[in-house]
Amino acid sequence: MSAYAWVILCSFIGPLLLSFDKKVAFFRSWKYLFPSILFVGIVFLIWDEFFTRIGVWGFTPKYLAGIYLGHLPLEEVLFFLVVPYNFIFIFLVLKAYFPVRKTKLIRNVFKWMIGLSALLMVVFYAGTQLFFSTLDHYHYYTISAAFFSFVLTLLAHKKAWYGDFVLSYLVCLIPFFIVNGILTGSITDDPIVWYSEQHIIGWRMGTIPFEDLFYNYDLLLPLAWLFNIFRGKAI
Image 1 (cartoon, rainbow, N blue to C red):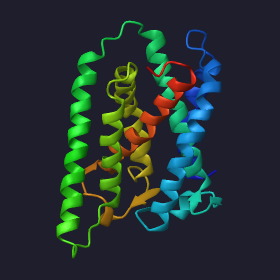
Image 2: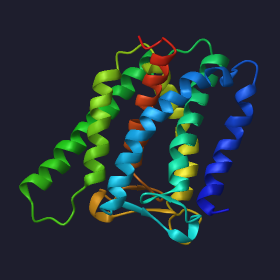
Image 3: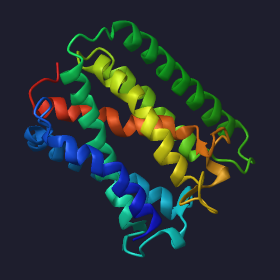
């Protein structure tokens, strides 16, 4: 089995086995979860395929099984099943085991932090590219990930579930740094997933591009929104 597949499997096995915990009973929410994953996954696979084609990022073959959907390895496709599954699992675990959650302050602080930082990224790097067209750094990843983070925050920050989403997102940063760190080369000779320096700002959290924080947010926020819509709680 490929190195990328091992990363996916190891990150998935725990939430899958615990999905039958009586208090959370996550398996009962699968009927809402999988349609949410499908809709969000299609959008992100298209984005992923396009950026792979133009060289914004790519994959090191020696860590892959060699099975592709378009230009995307099978492991990358499974990434968009496993990460959303794990996130909603954590989202429901926090609600089940911590019924009293004071999220108002953290929600308000976070929405300003993510919203303003995303907006500044878009304005600065899109503006730089617009006025200095001779530059060889295009920051496609930076601009797109930050732009969607700003728009999604603007649309979702007043939703009743947004505070729980923020709390879940922050908790998920722990496995995020482990998994994305491995994928970007923290324990391998070469990164499993590499990024073109032309399209990122160059800030790294260990081996992880800073833009991954926005990208992860862009993936998980629509997922949570759809999940709550399907279960009738998208107030």
